[in-house]
Image (cartoon, rainbow, N blue to C red; front, side, top):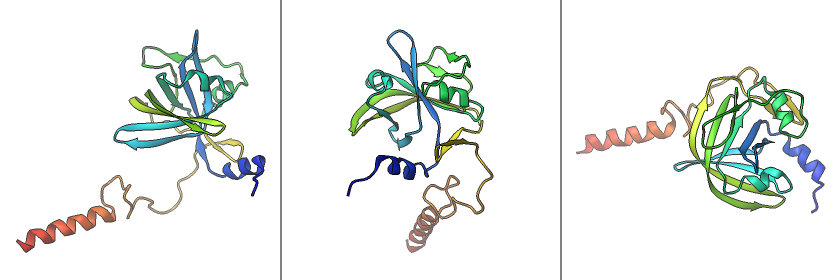
Length: 188
């Protein structure tokens, strides 16, 4: 079965993502690329992954270099366009003094040391070990079905209850093991 690349891209666009600008030191100045193919990989060690088109300049600069994943805030649409190769006239404000160049005003900043680079077909997969993080609670810029979006109202329900990812630690796993420990204590 042969897939039409345009149809595949449209289908994959149904997965909403955040919008990031991945930055590193270029040949003479900081360089960045707008990337929505970003994901957390591991908490121990702390790893993240960005995927870059092999034809991009960022794919030449990033492997083996410290880099920053700048999670854009809702009011940074112009920066998304700027680093996608369509400057909108807004001045780029860089933060200085970090392991890798970073952008000012982002919702979050994740600075990484190089970890590994892998073949990903027409992309390269770059893993970075998280060295520093910053966040300020600002809402992120989102991308879905070819358009930029803002975070909407939360969906109804309690998504964490009964899951292993429950941040309060009160998921089924914690409850199960608490009961096992309690039962073993009574069996002595």
